Image (cartoon, rainbow, N blue to C red; front, side, top):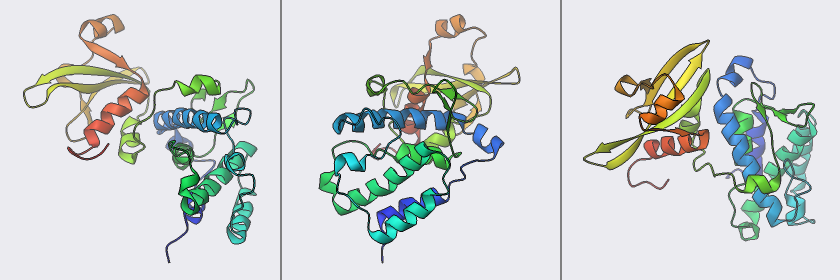
Length: 260
């Protein structure tokens, strides 16, 4: 018998290490940051759809969709038992929402709006390093990086993260302070195409790297970045944020002719 969607989601959440190994989490700072940004964007869309802005950002959307919705009793009992072990009310609320929305999607897909999956970026965030916590100023501590959630309206204009593929997320992650740049090169086969270059600074040491055709980072070689930001721009390199870098990585990792 096929496992129900709510049980699949609950099992994913059960596998999360809420307080993860520090080194493991720090190695995934960039992907966790872009996943949190994408969740906040999607949460703003769903909050707008169901007039739930006051509950944004970390909320269970299902009561706003259908106040009478209930999980099957056995699944509800399993969920409640699990939530008793989850640290933090916002974590519990979103875990509950992820399980319940999975059940809604399976049992009544026509009831869902034409919006991207609400909880998938946040569940991936949890899977890649565990919890977030609030700081004293109301910001988010994502372990290794502070993050300001902003407002629902402000997050509606955030550029979307087009791929949640594990290979894309892994390629974003690196130790050190990372800056991304696009270099537009002309190729006879492809016309103009963007090459992705990054600079990592680890303990004061610079590493300039190119995302290569084997879908790994390699020394930048002739595309090594100049020393200053002014010189970098003069060399035709365009600064990118992490979401734009993820889009280039996604394009490189998607086989020709395959849907992105």
